[in-house]
Image 1 (cartoon, rainbow, N blue to C red):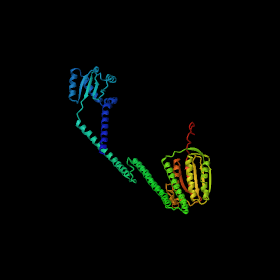
Image 2: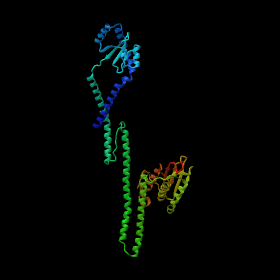
Image 3: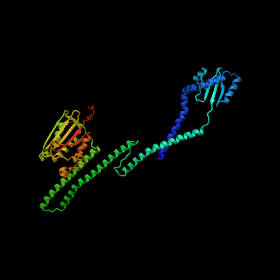
Image 4: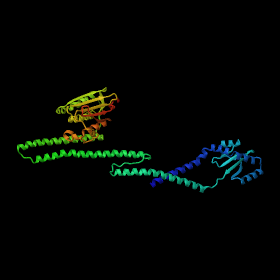
Length: 442
C-alpha cells in the first residue's frame, strides 16, 4: 500500500507542479490583451495622476519630478523614446501612439505616453516572499497527501477484502464471496468476482457429482463382470456346466454392452458440454424428422405394448437445426417415455410464425413429483421411483437433451401431461441457414 501511495502522490505532485509552471509561462502571454485592458481600467486614475504630475514639467524640472516620484513609490521610473521600444509589437506601438497605457508581455513593465511624446517607463519590483510561498505550497502538498491517503485507504480496504476473498477461494473455500457495500467504488468488480466464483463453484460441484456418478455407474457392471469371470474359471466340464457357461457368457456380453452404452453416453455428454461436437445446421423437414424418430422407437413401443402418435403442425414446414442432435434429443425422450407410459405416447412438433420449433413428448405414466423436477436434467439423477437402472437408465439421457437444446439456443422444460404423466417440451428458436459454397446466405 505504501508503494502505491507514494507513486500516486508523486504523480499528483508532478502533475500539479507542471500545471503551475504551464500557467505561469503561458497564461499571461496567452491572455495578454485581456490583462492589458484590465490594467488600463484599474490604473486609469494612476495614469492620469502621473500624466498631470509630469506633463507640465520639462528638462531638469521633469528629472527632479521623477526623483521625487521615485522616492515615494515602490516602482522604478525612467523616460524612454518610442524608437527604442523595438521589443514591442505593432499593436502595442500603435496603442502608445494613441496615448494608451501599454503592458509588456511579462506584465512587469508599463509604458505611459506623455504629452510631449516621451514615454514613462515603470517597472514593478516584486518583493521576495519565498518563505511564505514555500509554506503555502507545503500546506497544499500536505493537504493533497492527506486527501490521497484517505482516498487510497478507502479503496485499499475494499481491495484487501476482495484480495482475501480471492485468496480463500483459491485455497479451496469455494463458498467464499466478496461482501462489499453497494456504495463501494469497486462493488461492480466484487459483483463480477462473486458471479465468477458461483460459476466456478457450480462447475466444480458438477464435476464432482459427475465423477461420483460415473464411479457408481461403472462399479456395478464391473463387479458383475468379475463375478461372471470367476464363475467361468471355476466351472466344470460337464454338459450341464457348459450350458450354464453359455448363459454366463451371454450375461457377460450384456454387461459389456451396458458398459459400452454408458461410455458412449458419457462421451456424448462430454462432447456436448465442451462444444467439441460441431453442429451441422441445415434446413430439415419437420414432419420427416418426427417420422424418422417414430420409426426408430417403433420396436420398443411395440415390445411394451404401447401406442405412439406422432404428428407435426404449424405454418412453417421446415426448420434450421442439427437434425442428428434434434433426433437424438427426441429419441432420448421417447425411450424415456416407453419406460413409464401405461398405454400411450404422444410426439408432437409445432412451428409458429416467429420460426420457433416446439417439440413435445408426453406419456400417460405416473409422472414426476414436483420436488424432483428441479434436478431431473442433472447427470445421473433418477427420480426415487426409477432408481433401478433397468427402468431408469443411466440418468444421462435427459442431461443430453438439455445440452442439445442449449446448443441450439433453446431450452427444455418438464410439465405435467393432461393424461397424468410427464410432458417434456423442447423449444428451438429460429436459426439462419448456413450459406453453401457459392450460394449467398438466405
